Length: 107
Length: 118
Image (cartoon, each protein chain N blue to C red):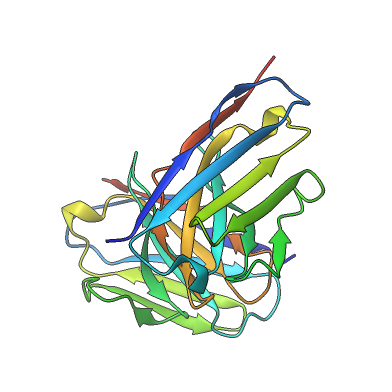
């Protein structure tokens, strides 16, 4: 199975900051990497698919990059509604696997 | 609009069984792969299982392989997860999810809580 390792597990940031989250796959997954946002008590929401494609309706302050084993997710500038937990997820092979999540908290 | 209405959660003893159901509407159910994803209390997301649009292909996470069975009824727009030999560590909110072209998870049910406890 492909292991997805996210870092950091949490971070503190202020509105207007640039926030970067990393996700590393245990093997080459090409660009088959998605990013989701989850707020407390809510279902996850897709933000980025296939590493760098912004889902329709998602603000352009969210972006993604990377390929093979190393991926980056960026929020710039951070907005008040962006405080949430973010997950990467690979869809190269079944079983699909998620990273452990990164909680973005207010500084 | 797409709706995924889940039912079947509850409290069950270790070793027992439970079946989750998911009623789909607002899209052509027989055309889409369907997944189950779970989230233990206060923990992250864990992908559980997928079934292809026609039910011919099924995949499972290692943690549930041999104990859980995913199935679907395309005539009635229903998705199921049969969970046997339940363990305390299976305690989680289980989400029914529709995918988009096998690329990402796009529509989520509201989740149903399964608690495995003696």
